[in-house]
Image 1 (cartoon, rainbow, N blue to C red):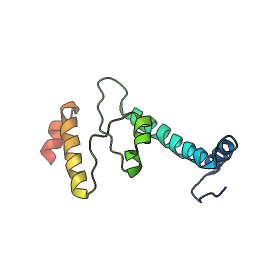
Image 2 (spheres, rainbow, N blue to C red; image 1 turned 180 degrees about the vertical axis):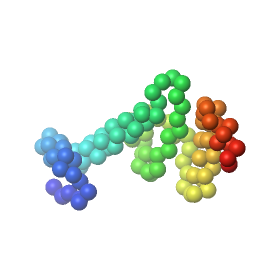
Image 3 (cartoon, rainbow, N blue to C red; image 1 turned 30 degrees about the vertical axis):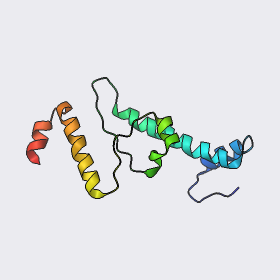
Image 4 (cartoon, rainbow, N blue to C red; image 1 turned 60 degrees about the horizontal axis):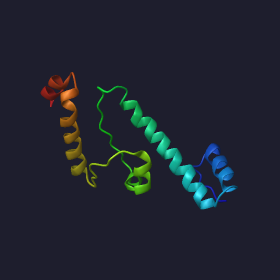
Length: 112
């Protein structure tokens, strides 16, 4: 089994263990995608702790466009951008979305 330098011992061990029970390619898929999904869900969950909380999630990786990952994450993708201008527009939209919930929105908007 070949390993890239970026794999740590934990990941390598998980992949080796799963490879004993299934095809190597499938084991690698589960190890890397499952870890990604768990970490992203943990991070997104930290933003929303109560019904009053609001958040805008920005995922900066093309892999989140994959149907299988989107389905596992169970979050809608409402916008995809491919340029700096598109990102600036998306951030402005996110700010407008969050301003009504911000206690400091008047102070922040006067500084812009």
